[in-house]
Image (cartoon, rainbow, N blue to C red; front, side, top):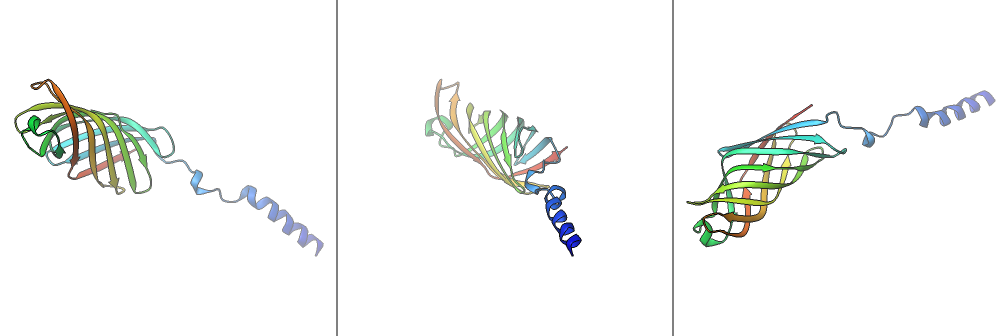
Length: 169
């Protein structure tokens, strides 16, 4: 009986040392990620590198004629609420969970209104949901400057729908 009690105490004291570790401290399986974002008549590519357990930092560039709903001063875009983003360059900071991703990025964007060309420097935020293929929306707040008017104005825009394909390694 004494041996059984000693063996039981031995197993109880050794169990925490050889037991299963907590899954919350497990590192993600990938360090690099390429994102392919497809919008209405536009596409962008991004590369991110993991900087922390849930955070990735990288660069993002895109071309196309993607449609955005925008709020700007009436005289600068001729009362148009649809703005086409022609090109953009950004530095995304991405927080990701299992299925959700939140992205905040400083962006420099070239936009085309009804008959004007303008440049926007601002902060973009994006929310995405999914694992293999993600659906999301992106908004941007910034300063719009049109060289033709030599002035700047407040700019707020939102993309309609973004389909993101992440490639991880």
